[in-house]
Every structure is written in structure tokens, then in C-alpha cells.
Length: 168
Image (tube, rainbow, N blue to C red; front, side, top):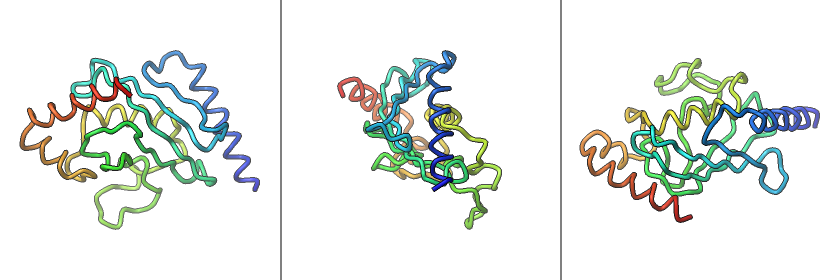
């Protein structure tokens, strides 16, 4: 129980810090049902992002009781087409993988979750991922294939996601 209350205290401080930081444009966070372990996130992607610029994407960060030892899960609630996002919206990015050796040898332990990560660093990494997908280890095979083989069609699919995100 002490670990859970320590995690809750840390998450409360991190959320407060994010609210007081004015230097994180395009990220808005709040609690779901006043639960510090469930955050609703809105990513307002700047026009500088090559593909997703202008989009408003809603997501959820779900933190485990073992936070910050174990990573949260992130899932987009707004439909989004991306090589590193499963069709159900779950984000597949190295820093959200548990802090252990990759049994497939793809990622080093240094690329995976570490307790020094914060919700802010996660969200900044996800925004960076939107601009620079990792198509060598895709969560969405169709998106990765289009990214590599048919960039015009990939861009067309993504622009539709951006338009749809503005209507939600």
C-alpha cells in the first residue's frame, strides 16, 4: 500500500509540474474520474510535424501501482494511423517497454523504461515518434508498409486522421 501511495504522490506532483510548465506547447493533461493513475491527454500537434500537424489527438496514460519502477501504458482514443501505434490505439515505443532485456535482442535496456522517465518525457517522445516512425519494428504493419513503399498514400491516410481528429 505504501508503494501505491508513493506512486500517487509522485504522479500528483508530476501532473502539477506539467500544469505549471508553460514551455510544453500542445500538451494538455488531466485526471480521469479524479484518479491520479489515469490521465486523459490531448496532443495538439503543431504544423511543424510533417504528417500529423494540425491534429488534435486524445489519448490516455494508465499508470501501474508500481510506477515509476514500471512504465505506464498509452493508448490513443482518437483513431490514428501510424507504424508504431496498434490499430486499437496502443502506443508501441521503446521507453514504454518494461525495464528488462529484450528477448528478441531488438532494443537495449537503455532504450526501455527507466524510472527517470516522466509523463512529460513520454509525451514528448510520442510527439517525436509521430514525425519519425520506427518502421523496423512496427505495431501496425499496414502503416509501416505504406510509410516505406507508398509515402503519398501514407500521407493521404494520415491527413484523413488529422481531419477526423478535428471533428471529434
